[in-house]
Length: 313
Ligand code: FAD
Ligand code: NDP
Image (cartoon, rainbow, N blue to C red; front, side):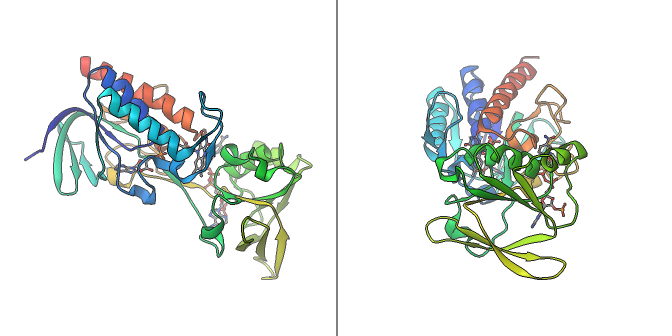
C-alpha cells in the first residue's frame, strides 16, 4: 500500500532540488522532497556541503557551502515543502501514477523532478583525505580564485575537456599550471587541446600519474610516477585540482529514463522534460558542462515550471 499519493516528488537536495521545491510549493503543488541520507556518499544538501567558501552565488559576497544549503533548505520548508531525510532506492515509471520506493515504503506521484546531482571522482591518494579542501579541490571555477591559490604552481590531473577548462581558468591566478595526463594523448576535443598547448602558462606532463599528496596544513607537493619508465619524482606545488570526471547519480533509475553514454539524463533540448512525460531533471544530473550552483538552481526553477504546466494540462 502506498504511504501517500502526491502531485510532485522531488529527489535530491542540492540547489536544483530546493529551487524546484520553492517554486513548486509557491505554485501550491505541495512538493514532497527526499533529500537523501548520505546518498552517493554526500550529506543532504549536496556537493556544496563539501566545500568551504562560495563566492559566486549572487546575493552572497561570501558564504560557506553548508550555510548556503541550510538557507535554501529553510526557504523550501518556509514555502511549505515537506522534506524527508531518506534516500530513494528505486522508481517505477512504467505506470501512472509513478511509484517511488524509499526504504521499503512506496509513494505514488503524478510527476517527479530528479535532482540527484553528480559526484566528482577522487583518486584516494595518500594524503588526500587530510588535505581535501586544504589545497585539493575538484572544481577550479569554484575554488581557483581563493587567495590560497594565488601566484602558486598548481597541478590539474586529467586530460579531458574539464581538465582543459580548469587549467585554462587557473592561469588567471597561478604562476604556472601543470597538467598531469596519464596517457600520451589528451582526451579533450582538438579545439580545447589547442587552447592549452598555446597557453604559455600551462605545461602538459604526459605519461604522468600522481602517487601521493604532500603537506601538513596545506598542499606543498605531489609525488608522481612516469608511467613509461616508472621513475618517481616530486613536484613542488601549492594546489591540486582533480578533473578526472564525475559520476552522475542515476543508477537508481535503472535505465527507465534516457541517459547519455556517460550516464547523465538527457532532457529534451531547452526544457527539463526527460524521455518519460511527467518526469523532469535539473542540476548536475543532466549537466556535464556548466556544473555550478547557480545553473543548477536555474534549471530547478525550469523543472518546477515545467511540472506545473504538465499537471495543469
Ligand atoms: P548536488 O549538489 O549534486 O546534490 C544532489 C544531492 O542529492 C546529493 O548530493 C545527495 O545528497 C542527494 N541524492 C542523490 N541521490 C539521491 C537519492 N537517490 N535519493 C535522495 N537524495 C539523493 N558551484 C558553485 O556555483 N560555486 C562554488 O563555489 C562551488 N564550489 C564547489 C566545491 C566543490 C568541492 C564541489 C564538489 C562543487 C562545487 N560547486 C560549486 C558545484 C556545485 O556544488 C554543483 O554544481 C551543485 O551543487 C549541483 O547541484 P545539484 O542541485 O545538481 O545537486
Ligand atoms: P572525461 O571522462 O572526458 O575525461 C577524464 C580525463 O581524466 C581523461 O583524460 C582521463 O584519462 C583522466 N582520468 C580519468 N581517471 C583518471 C585517473 N584515475 N587518473 C588519472 N587520470 C584519469 O571527463 P570530463 O569531465 O573532462 O568530461 C566529461 C564530459 O563532459 C565529456 O563528454 C566532455 O566533452 C564534456 N565537457 C565538455 C566541456 C565543453 O564542451 N566545454 C567542458 C567540460 C566537459 P584517459 O583519457 O586516459 O581516460
